[in-house]
Amino acid sequence: MISDGPHATGRPIRFGTSGWRGILCDEITGPRLRALAAAVARWAAEEQRGRPQLLVAHDTRFLGAELARMAQSVLETNGVSAREVASPVPTPVVAHAVRERRGDAALIVTASHNRPADQGVKVIAAWGGGVTGEQAQRIEALAVPALARPAPAASRQDREPPLDLVTPYVESLASLIDRRATRRAPVRVVYDALHGTGAGVCDRVLRDMGASVVVRNGLRSPHFGGRAPDPTPARLVELGRALRATHGACLGLATDGDADRYAVLDASGRPFAETEALALLVDHLARSGRVRRGVAISIATGSLVEAVARDHGLDVERHPIGFKHQSRALAEGRADVAGEESGGFAWDPVARDKDGVLACALFFEMVASGGVSPRERLRALARRHGRRVCGRVAHRARPAARARLAALASAPPSRVGGERVTSVDLRDGVWLGLEDGFLMLRASGTESVLRVYAEAADARGLARRFEIGARLLGLP
Image 1: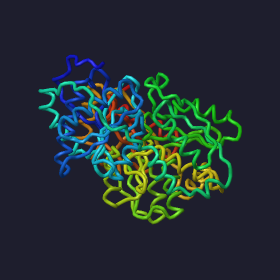
Image 2 (image 1 turned 90 degrees about the vertical axis):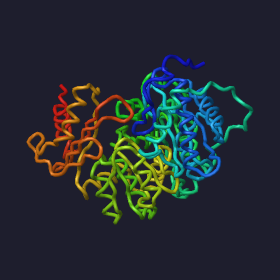
Image 3 (image 1 turned 180 degrees about the vertical axis):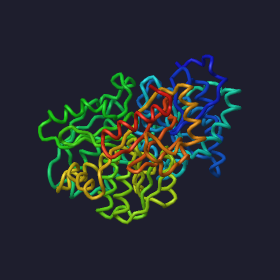
Image 4 (image 1 turned 120 degrees about the horizontal axis):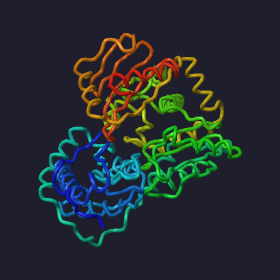
């Protein structure tokens, strides 16, 4: 059972970059979850005519099923038709179902790539992407009175069987993949599910496409092997070793806890940086004529993606961090493809929110189609557009560092590390354009950290910019 504890009232519920997240039994408690569900019900009723239908799902995290059932009961008590989704299930599968109008919105109990101690909720809006900032603020406001009068726990009523959303998702994705190309030659893939919801879904998609798949960490677990289910380079070391040790393997793939993020490794076990992977996907789709309207990326995404897109005659939009911004560009028809610096990717025929399974399928299609390898393709793109490296590091969000960030936003520097600042963007933190890249400082919207993002001509320059960013924040 989930204790009501001392947090039924008190501090407000706040959405971050991608939903509401926090430590389970501290920020995320039963009364607070019920208050949020009541607020979501009222928001959905405002957004939709008639009685809205919401999909309710969860990932593999601790107490996910109990919290989802609790939310469903509150939604129904507040006049919403709430349909349970067979779970644990990847977030992109649920978002795809909303996009296909199988629900007016969705509430998903998930903390995505956060550490095992965390829980959270994502709310998917009618167009199949995360709620906008304005919608999140409205839900937060509606939660205030609900926190003061927390909804009582409700017993579960007899309901329809849970919806299977995986099968229609897999079928939809398969209809858009070049199946003849993927079956030209056998390709062996090593896939790391990181104990998340991609297990049994991403490998199913790859096998249906003709891949021979070796699955790692395929047992769904709330502990995620004791580490955050985030496919960062540090978490991909073991996948790299497994890839080198697997005879005939030529591609490594991974997804995060709720399978909305992805990572890719080449045959040698070397990971592609997020900007590199996104540039390859944009190039692959553009070459095959499957992207025409444009590309939406985050402000912290490296310049290679923009160069590749413009080389194919595609318009490029840059948005603040938070995939909800790119989702709107897809929904409003301004872009076909969206991506970001942290492993987020969407292609409009399938997804308007981050979809790691889709990205993995397209990378397999790229490799199975024959010709040059992704690493060789990347070298060709670098020769054509110039090579730069980019990345990000995180620091604890100490109060003094937050104050320094606020001061920088009020008075951005004209030079950093002896280099002239060529442009400034304050839409999301402090972004400083430099001659051969950028430096960006920002408070995370999902974790209690300050991030330094940078792009430079080489690895040494990138490391130097990380050091400059830390100094600007007053960090050692």
